[in-house]
Image (cartoon, rainbow over all chains, first blue to last red; front, side, top):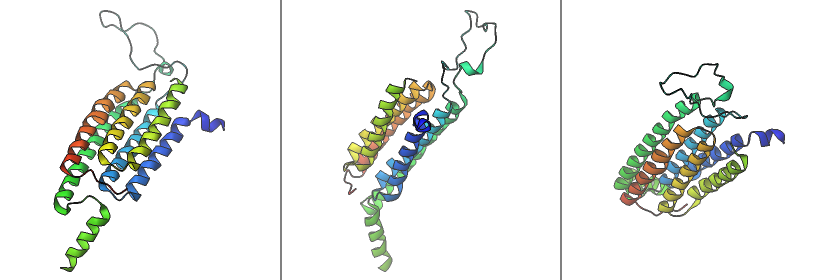
Length: 133
Length: 81
């Protein structure tokens, strides 16, 4: 029980990822599949951001210098700052996510122009009829 | 990270994710997905990842929603599931 409460972010991430996966596999509408893909990617980003969190008074990794830009003398401890490596990686992942989303929607528009529908079963029906003629 | 605030936001995120894939209108789905992205951005701000949070707020909640609404305008709002 203690394990579940301590890591609640990770459980929410698993739930969100399964919601997105369900939408990608089960939903018949192609736009709903794209929404599911977006939720899946956002859940994965939530996982990586959660790994960077430190409890016990850790803040954002900004070192404040004096007026001339010189660093304040003394030792910096990594335990005082949140791990910035997953943040940088996930910044790239967000940009890739939006690029993927844009390409998927462009394909969606092309599919609609060709078949006049974005339901997967109706598209398969049209393709089956075209194969016979 | 304030855990009460965090727990409320995580619950709302799951509700928004379920609503975005179950709603019967694609325009509503686009708006709910925008709300989902913005709530996610608030969670990341709480975790101290402010750079990721404002990228998500501009690109995820802003540009994605505009793209999706434009795509729906060129196609159809109708959905069966």
